Image 1 (cartoon, rainbow, N blue to C red):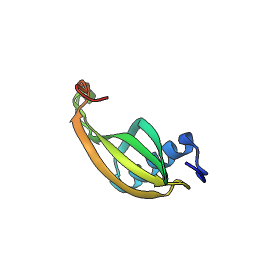
Image 2 (image 1 turned 180 degrees about the vertical axis):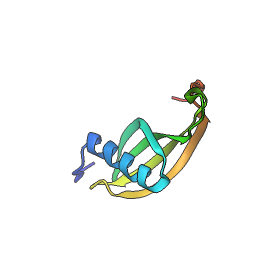
Image 3 (image 1 turned 90 degrees about the horizontal axis):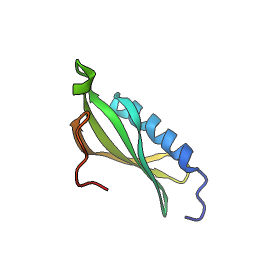
Image 4 (image 1 turned 45 degrees about the vertical axis):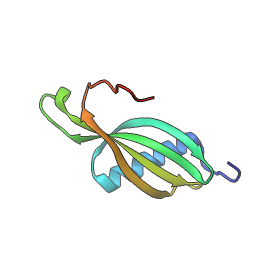
Length: 91
């Protein structure tokens, strides 16, 4: 990953900022950060639908591709599920 100027920590923070701005959803946290040849692939969990009680919120995981400087190249939702549901079959 020659030439990468952004650290994993900074890439995670930037992905959260980008997704919060674009989706207007509350970010719950970062699920994973992975270096790529051209930057970073970051999975971010967001609260898609606040419900009462909070234990019935709908969550989603978005995958964000960032370049070496942390600029967003693309994003997509990869999963959607109710809070507390086990992530069976996923690594």
